[in-house]
Image (cartoon, rainbow, N blue to C red; front, top):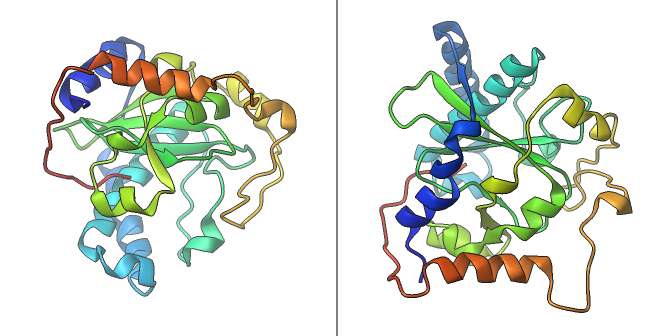
Length: 239
């Protein structure tokens, strides 16, 4: 079974030298908290959010901190403060580009869809300093769909749904720049959560009759700790 603490060191912390540190100021943090609280209040009226209302605000604060950090780094406005039901806001986060932002607490692996249709900028919140967010890099559709494993999800309820998985391919993330976003500029967006963005076939991962790259990646992940015991740890909120 996977030793998550050791795996986090090997697959995330070892690449920290490449991460970009962004410091948010008090006004930005205040705006993030207020916006997250307003969004969470609207979510509490939705069945899917009633079960874990206490953690909704924290999840949205993390998500908005990542968006604010990416926006500050790229010198563009990313946060959408509008409040509404989930289906109305299910599209990539960076305006004008088919690219999302995925943010997670330090010590946890990012939770992503099992089937990704657009790239994600991966961010990590500092474990003790609320104002610091690390931009880890840009994950392509192929990278997101290949370097994933459901055992990286700590929440048993989320894992049981079968639609999400954990991402571990930090070694494959590329540098985030405006140039790296250019291939995804103006991509047609859909609000249907099952078809969030129109992606050309050239950008989708290729299938093979032989063993898939995803299966190879999962084997690589499990080989790291095949003799180790799985260590349970208390679940914090995962974005």
